[in-house]
Length: 141
Image (cartoon, rainbow, N blue to C red; front, side, top):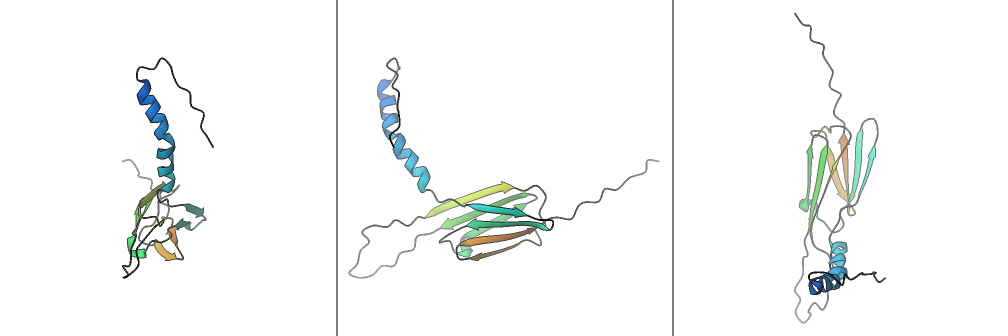
């Protein structure tokens, strides 16, 4: 679909605007090609369950960090190629790169009891909630 572009005839630098407008669709396409981590987050009384799409990522290349109620998932997709005699690569459309996703949960996570597993390109995190801190009344003497 074509974009409607308005040209300012009184612009100070009309050529710069012209070239910037020509490059706009190209820059928009690059953003679509970057690897992304898509999430589903569910909560119950015991904790949170997070399912993240990480297709084509080995478990060694996934990094999960928990800091209080902040969770960060990072994944590195590496393109591995096999070199065969008599054959050459004409086109490769596989994605590779680095993706990271951070999000904040409503309550703190018990990071010592957190579990993670990868199966069929889906990372599943089980994040138990930290026990509620008991408030203690201090008598003033």
